[in-house]
Amino acid sequence: MQELPVEIYSVAAVREIDRRGIEDEGISGYTLMTRAGTAAVHAANRHFPEARRWQVICGAGNNAGDGYVVARLAGDAGIVVSVVTIVDPNALRGDAATAYSDFDANGGVVTAWSGDLDADADLIVDGILGSGLERPLQGQFADAVQAIDAHSAAVLALDIPTGIHGDSGHVLGAAVTADMTVTFVGLKAGLFLGAGPGHCGALEFAGLDIPEHCRDVSATVLRRIDEARVRTCLPRRPRDAHKGDFGHVLVVGGGAGMPGAVRLCGEAALRAGAGRVSIATDPAHAAIVVASCPELMSHGIETAADLDALLANADVVAIGPGLGTSDWARALVAAVSAVDIPTVWDADALNLLADGGDRDENRIITPHPGEAARLLNITTPDVQADRAAAVSALKEKYGGTVVLKGAGTLVSAAAGAPFVSTSGNPGMAAPGMGDALTGVIGALVAQGLSLEDAATVGVEVHARAGDVAARGGERGLIASDLVAELRGVINP
Image (tube, rainbow, N blue to C red):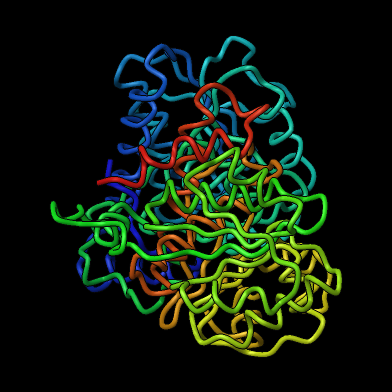
């Protein structure tokens, strides 16, 4: 199985790649289908080696054809296979009809869907409907999906879990929740957006040996933040390095009664490699912050004028964690907005930006969906309905680089498609995670990365640290756990 590519496509673009492989390169459609079935069987055997009784659920179109190929090849390998079909296989056309014919000629038996699955099956293969689904599932299709989700066996989805929209990742009425998805030809956006990541399980990719020149990189709608990008942006440090080489981050926040956020942000910046980190906070918090993390330089700020000397010595400002929306907070936002150095905005700084902020190309904003909704004067469901469009709108309105947090965090790009992080886990839905991310991104800017590189790599290493921290369990994961793992993932 191939490493996941960087490029992520629309369903229409994947179909075009498939067409080029068939028409321009002379690879028959059935050859591609057979390669897909072979890849799926190999992946299933690797991931579910104890599963020796499979049930394949076939529906319509080429997804059903893939299912019949899987059933035939698994049977040839000595696996006990049964096939349930929702659509009369004699109604299939083209390559799918050929796949059924070969399965039938090989002695395969098909049972019409009756509402029940094999209770003894230890692997269910979803070959019901592929990535072209555009309307909510109904009738037997919906019943079959619900039966799969209720079954105790592991589930393998072919190409995309049935019921997930191939472009948006939205659930169309009901959707299979797979333990693993093997996707073919090209990565589909719906696997990474909306509910897609929660339904596809472990994701594997098989390009089916379609030549690379058949893939139009310009047609990508998203790009994965991959290992090569992380390593390129985080080279080993020279032996004669000193802390002055790695920048000075100034964290501004921590309004009255909220010292924790700036403390987390500051330590995350240190763990991400910043040379120095200063904290500008409410005077009542200055001693608390430095006592809990003596490596931080903490300063009590009475008025915006107290920021002047700190701003003059900073390479980047991270503003917003625990800031609040008081007059004090508004004055600090105004002071930071007036300086000509890179800034990273989060939390209440974004809420104040929504009240009347303008464009700034030297800024990174890091909203979660609720903050993005306020910045765009729309609803949170509107943001989540089309996250890529929300990123584009935020960049158009506010400039700079945009990080839209959430499952599958998106990062805007100066040119080309936005980036998406495929790391991270539900345990990161916890207080302080955004504060830590702000510190990580600020530290990378301080170390000389461009705003775009700092945002993309910062998002990815933050998510990877969250995955390491979650090895002990997602429930109960806290931001301090993630910060403690940063050093292990940020060094090449």
